[in-house]
Image (cartoon, rainbow, N blue to C red):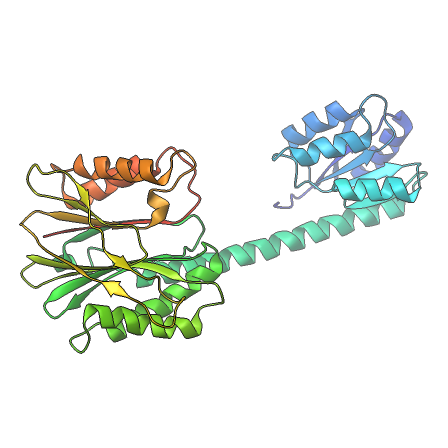
Length: 370
């Protein structure tokens, strides 16, 4: 809520004298009053005017103030507007019921004008302070998002790696991660999904990039790289947190692919010719959960133009379809893009899998070409 120069106060009271008194008071104090006489009028005015605060009488004919309050809080458009209840009733049960329904304060009739103004100003100050906190937190989240994006390579940063990527977090900062880096003349492609998609998961990604690159090199086989990463993650992840990951390596001539999976969804291979798209199944344990892990690398020869798509499970899991249907949908989408450039194909597949549905998990799609 951005506080206006003249804060708008919506008054709902069936008694003419109360409305008249509050109108003069509010005008005199520099506020803009909006007057209504019953619950339905109050709710309609709240939707139209978006007041800064509502003064709501409990004892009104027809729809009571408590019923109006409940309906205001049930509508997304009006749920966040603070409501002060006005009533001649002073019993604890009524007050508690009002607070349970979402009222922020309660003034007993006959009210004192100074008290009413003090409570209005106090609640507006609280609302403004809350908005300041929210804006500050949002800015910090944006900084985390920007920092996370800064560590994720783009195809323009490494054109010789021949990859394209689409990254769609459900929050400002996501728990999915990818990296692409040079490796002995070839390239390594890494996609991971950190359990959970809250802010805590996003903090793991910067450290994961450093650990991965420190352990990927000529001293270690691909399996040893992931086992070393697992050893480090065992000491830094929160209890119950883990990673699934897929690690693909292309040799310098881009003719051989070595693939390792740590409990991760199987990548899709789309041959350059007319062969069907298929899954590349490789077996392995998740990272960060066990003291030691078992991995079974998959090696295959590639032909020029063959494409491999690595992804996280947010791409195929949905409330609209089960995992099997999502995987079939992904295979069909990848196969339909043979005539497109790699970058175009990644965008096409992302749209086919993500557009038109509510994303409940982060999604990464990374394509590479032999």
